[in-house]
Length: 278
Image (cartoon, rainbow, N blue to C red; front, top):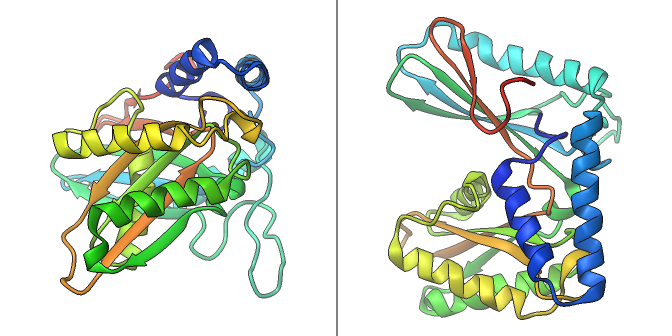
């Protein structure tokens, strides 16, 4: 589902960008993107040839039994999806350069675990493409740089990325914690729907400011100029060490693919982001 149909919030943002785009070239690019999305849905084929590295986010109820079986099940599901959809094999050993051929291997698919109350399991599939991943960035800023330094780093990251991540993009930003924590939280913010505002008022204002700053660059759809370089900016934070000010920036392409489902204790499956008829 994730690679063949975008969540409704992403499609709505893209349609809104198409309606409001003033550049003829940018509008043409957005029209092509929307046509591509519709074709993928109609034919149940991937909307992009890069079907990404497969990542899963799991919210596991503390009362659920058999959690030790989940990782094997997700790996088998990934192999099956690779055969049947099909997904492009994207799991390559960094030393031997050998492709495993089925999108599984050492730490792939990568699985993030979160233990929550209850007796259900919520699974989110998050295929992350290589083009947008390549321009993600980590900045170990000086504590004195503060929020001003954060803003500068985020906008410079967008400008340096240019057309490479297939804009319009979603920008995930996280500050604090440590190098690994900031990057992990930045990527996780990409799971938040585009129509869901940040619950922290100060962060919501900062998101709006960065959204406007990124779009003022004029990079535009597919880097060919226009109003819409980003569809949204999402921000998260962790408490930081007094000597550190890490800022993680995770970039997501227009194909902001994610699909979530909840498995109840009786075995019933509830699809959270896509039509259940599928």
